[in-house]
Amino acid sequence: MPWGRGIKGPRRRRRWWVLACIVTAACIGGVLLLFHKRPVVWFDATEITKGPVPVEEARSVSPIPLPDSARNVYVYIFSQGPALDECVMFDAPVEDCMGHAALVLEQAGGAGAPGGAAPEMQAIDPEVSPQESGTADLPEWFDVGTIREGSVSTGLGSFVPRVWVDAARGVFYYRRTD
Image 1: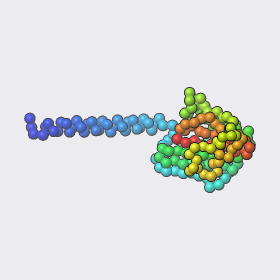
Image 2: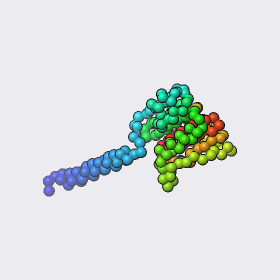
Image 3: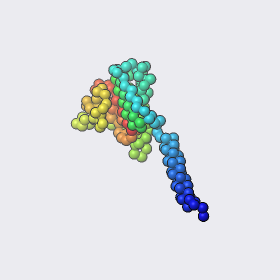
Image 4: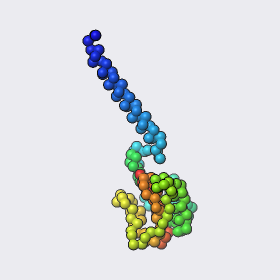
């Protein structure tokens, strides 16, 4: 038996084992990215309107479609790696806000909802503040905690949109997080 042959064999097997692990991890990562619900942005991106903008201008940056009756539109989008936070607020007649809430929730389908059911709107309890958790870093205009009369969507979970309609002021709020 030539010198070193016993050492060369285990090293070669170890190299093949490491290479097999790397290829397997790359394949699993590729499949996860392929079937992910949204494209992954691997850089920081923040889009925020500096003030209320017309609906025509807001449509270019809004993550959701906007009704023609929308006024004073605000948009906030934060993305850092796979993290996501989207917020939209606009003024419109209450009937348009409720109709648009139904459209946004219908487009979301049953994503993340128990049993695959689409989220629905329910009346806000005036005794309980509808304040959303994790709002410390949100713009000051996203003030769902001030709603006393209106509706809120029932869906909770990652990538499931949350919608509020302030019936007293005619304001539509939308938020989707990862």
